[in-house]
Amino acid sequence: MRMTMRKTGGALAGASLLVWALTFGTWVQAGPSNTPLPTFSDASPALHVYTAVGVIKNNDLETAFICTNLDTVAVHIGVEVFDKEGVLANSVNAGNGAILNVPVGATRTFATSGTALLTEDALITLLPNLRNGSGRVVATSKTISCSALLLDEVHAIVDPLLCPTCPPPAVAHLPLIRVP
Amino acid sequence: MVDGRRRRGKTQVRRLSAGWGLALGLCALLGFPSRGLAGMLDTPLPTFSDGKSAQVVGLLPRVIKNHNLETVVVCTNLDTVAANIGLEVFDKDGVLVNSVNAGNGEILNVAVGATRTIGTAATALLTEDHKMTLLPDLRNGSGRVVASEAKVFCAALLVDQLHAIVEPSICPTCPVPSLVSAPVWACGNSIVDPFEQCDDGNLEGGDGCSASCASEDPCFGKGGDTDGDTICDAEDPCVHFANTLPLVISGFSGIPDECLCGDFDGDGFHSATDAAAINDCAAFIRFDCVSLRDEVAAPIDGFYSATDADQVSLVSAFLEPVFQLTCGLRPEGTCGGATGVSCF
Picture: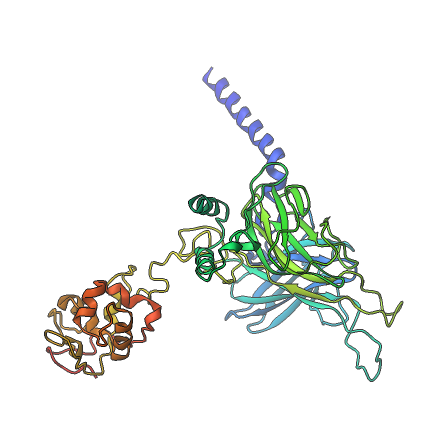
């Protein structure tokens, strides 16, 4: 009798958990604040360093992150991008948007695509049009400093003597939210 | 009326720091009470069309809709439940020009982690989820992002409405759209924005910075917890002693211990506790501070003296930054000795 009750209770608890997971599981793990942090490909756990609101990959407008390692040891740095519904769009663990062992004092650039203006160290492979989303910078140390840019993918700055009618690219600063 | 407005403001604008209240009070003092309900700071908050109340999650000191330059906000719901998000726009005179409650500038039920974009118009460059209906030329105004949940964060862009980015191989001379970021003042973004006393990147209190980005340090703006006892109290100014100038002050009655330092309490060191022992923190206020001190005592008699302290009867007077307390801090034990030994 007691065994039966225990089993029944266990089954009920399991069913409750399943219902809870089915009901809330999708949103609990959405977006930069509620998605579990990744590990890097060498299994090092990642820390959430910055949140980016307004990551755009749309109509040849891309987003780039420039990070400098201010720690006294090499660090891994990654950028995770979330689409407009908060779904993670790349896997840092698989090396998409990650650079391992950034040396002390070194700077690395991540971008949602290669651009004519910058020289990126890591290109994040994403679907062609993310449109408007968000992102987060993760690293094995919080002692890094990053900034972000929204920039024109296709235009470079051309010497006006060579091409007086060539337009310069559009570039805008994208504020990052530092996570304590 | 005033009390009612205050109560409403406290409830609604819970994410704005105490500094906003000071700013509003200053405006009233400066003679702008008629503007009391105008603009992003003081216009009553709306409710969303589903009846949920709104709170401010970001202030936009610059919203432009003029000559095909538009303003676009991109917001992500970082909360743990779905949120309504709205953008209210105010014209150059502070008049609200859209109704979130009527669905103009409103997006309901933005899922956790989701990002939505609201623009003052559709643009060729971006993909807006909601385009507001506004008069053709707002010119220059301001705005605020409101949401049903606290943890909604936004970025803002000023964007050329008409131009897209065109591949130069297709159109080498096609101009590129103008694009520039616009500030969004928000508590919890790790940036100490205007009217915030602090911003530690979260919306939790009890960690030194409140949920409304007001400092929880009782010493904030008062000279600090200089003696390190984690309490800002009358003891604190006592460690600011650098009485290098003998204070021969007219009107002073009693022993001028201001010009002395020593081991008054017999603990072997000259320190803050000495001031407590002689019960006169003013003993360690440097002369330049003292001269300012008298300026704020009432009645002003032209002299700093014991009566000044009596008039305000609070050592806290010395904690206020307005007095420009710049007295140096002498480390514990550097000035041992008997009463009357010169400090430096």
